Length: 163
Image (cartoon, rainbow, N blue to C red; front, side, top):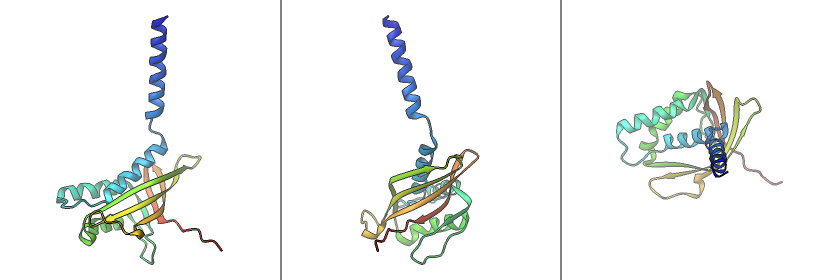
């Protein structure tokens, strides 16, 4: 009887662990978004090799036809090379930069090929100082290509205005 109980507990624990650790689309998308945020972040004193590696990781997470809509009248970046080029200049423009995502909400389409995520994006530049305008809600659109989730579009979410 004890042996059956131990076996039942072990099987139940294995099933629970597999269910919890199994990589779902939602988990993969969350991981993709956080890795993209890390790839855009520029640490202080970044060596050239680390910079190249960081930008290569960014490029791997973007669809070829990615579009970035920064808002505030800034031009739309309409392909992967333009987005990576902008990210490569971030360190020289504003010094160390950290991109943090929180409150990530993900909705995967029924077909499992497209997804929309929204997140609060906090930008820290020049150290730990955070300006009040550095928090934005951003809408991310992702597409599944060969089993990998790639960013297709990013744009600030419009704030709701009461009449």
